[in-house]
Amino acid sequence: MYFVFALLAGHQRRKARDCEPMKTIVVNVLKMSIVGLLLWWMVASGKLSWEPLAVFLRRPDAIFASVVIWVVGPLFLGTLRWWLLIQGAGLQCRYFYAMKLQTIGYFFNTAMPGAVGGDIVKAIYIVKSQGGAEAKTPAMVTVVLDRIVGLIGLFLMSVVTASFSYQQLSQNPVIVQLMTGLGIVVVLSIVFLTMVFIPYKNRPDPIAKILAYRMPGFTILSRIYAALRTYRERPWIILGTIALSVVLQVVFLWYLGFIGRILYGDEAFDPSLLAPIFPFGILATAIPLAPGGMGVGHAVFERLFALVGLPGGANVFNAYALSQLVLNLLGFIPYLALKKQGPKAGFDRSQVEDMAATI
Image (cartoon, rainbow, N blue to C red):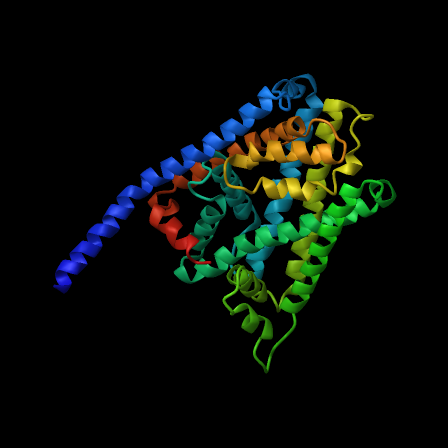
């Protein structure tokens, strides 16, 4: 009887695995349909036009700025941030190898949305380079923390940058509300990080005990807390990566303002108004519908720009996002180079699922 149940269970598992590819296809088709409808609606309503993209043909400095921003921002600073986290986790990895994996991650995030996450691919290659399965958890911790310190840096950059134009921004009640919300998030982040690095040598960790309760959101917070605690002996790494994140977000904010000015002119486009709304727009692009938040990002940036009196949110975001996404495709080159090294350099679906379940 047990044998019969085992056969039935195995059949059900095989059936579920066989249905998985179709489920993935259906989900991706639905996502792209939503994105397509959003873009169609924005074009039909006159909020989005593809003509402003011609600025990259008319203005060589726009192309130059796009390339420089990508190299300095995602490639150099983004890699440096992740590489520091790798070193802090006790993993051995050369900076330029991390840069190669970083570009591969950008390629997967751009070319294969919803299929294989670029972060998971990076973690898989790190584990392979260490030569042992024991590196799975610390490798995945590094990519998770890379996102977390990136968010903290984004909020911190927005608050600090906006404070320089406080007198001007305080005249707009919408901006005041946005900045108040961001300020609360920054304060909570500082408190959370302070608790992370408090040593509990001879007594149980009270924060871990609290987060062990079954409350909404506590599971995710507990994992984030545990990941950060692995760096409690090296707090300078977390602080350093947050500082890098602030610089990285300043670079992105400057580029968004640069695109806005060349599309609408210096008089119509005041880049100082971008700081309070930038984090909310970036968070919206994290919704996993299309690469770079296309569709959702257009709609959200259009609305955010209108709130602070800036023109062309959808058009500015369109040029901003597409100019960077095209460069992300360059990650295909190092990916092919690694694949030519043989089967051991590749990965399969089971490895992706196993890595995703690590954290």
